[in-house]
Image 1 (cartoon, rainbow, N blue to C red):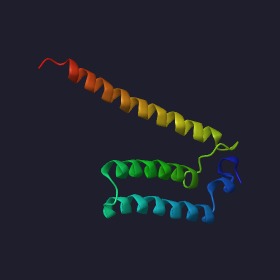
Image 2 (tube, rainbow, N blue to C red):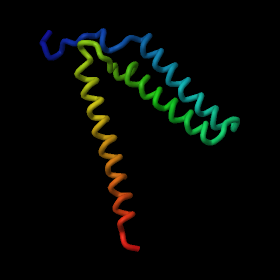
Image 3 (tube, rainbow, N blue to C red):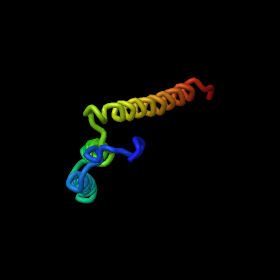
Image 4 (cartoon, rainbow, N blue to C red):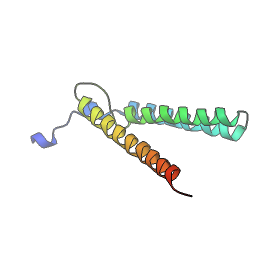
Length: 108
């Protein structure tokens, strides 16, 4: 087998880890859906719940489906992903800041 095709299959996950990720994803989708549809929560609490569960769901997807971790093998991929995410967040946040600042300085 050539060096280019040899992979560490342990890092690709198992049926059990994919099953856990799937179940967690479904739960993390159903709870915010229930929060919205039940109407038992204020708009502020509902929005906080949706954002909170979305963040947790992103972390579940990163761990169980993309297999990002800080083990010796996955550290480089994880750091690359985090750096890319930081650049994207900065790009969007600073673009919005520049747009709002330019709008505030426009003559009306």
